Length: 354
Image (cartoon, rainbow, N blue to C red; front, side, top):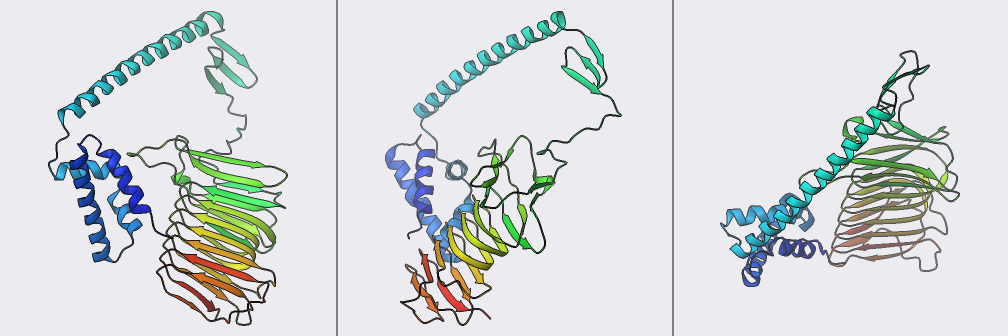
């Protein structure tokens, strides 16, 4: 599987430089591509790592143009100013409309609602626009507020789905635990940036962290999740946009995917489906492999290392593209247990667990 991250990055870069004429833009793209490849070869780093150091294509384009003293033609600048002018007047009109609506609301509150209202819960000013609760009343904190660091899930008999847009996911099986416990770092939580969803259906229980608001200039929601689960067979779906996935001492059916993070896990896996864009994968089967186990491991450019008990009989297939591969196990073509490892350019090893 070819690593397409450089092509995608250069396409975005081409759009960011669209103010230049085609020939000049093409020349700059070739120069930047050559610079990235030379740096990757000199540092022995992978392309995605180099691109991460450069930042987004838009920001890199601005820095590059400034360093090279490349000036965008006046026509492009006039177009930008024209669009900027329209945006400015739309913003002014919107703010004026918003101010008028706010004025109507204030008039309605002042003239058509009691100014002060007292009740057993406390005092309301302007119909509840301002509320003062009695001190002797206990307040229930919001589930998603900054003061609450943990979520509990009691019913999870079928499938547990954990999704995290940006941040790591760590799952650990705990002996004697009766429910799922999910924790995250209070300091990283933001009401403005983060959105947390937690719901249950007949088929699955889902816990999802996503970003409400983000931009090229400001980082979105980033939460690392720590999840403790009972030790029992269960279906897991773990998805991290760019973070690492770690799961220990769990068993059952596991699907794990991450865009650029690493995946590592150990446990008793019956069905395992792991996919990474550029991260490495390390997996350890702690018990005798099930006779009908099915494993699939796919990495874009990362390495894959799988460790099995010595007496494992398995029908395995490894495809590394341009990487190295090695197996300590004899090819058992008649075995029902199967494992397939596919790396675009990384190495793949199927080794005996020590």
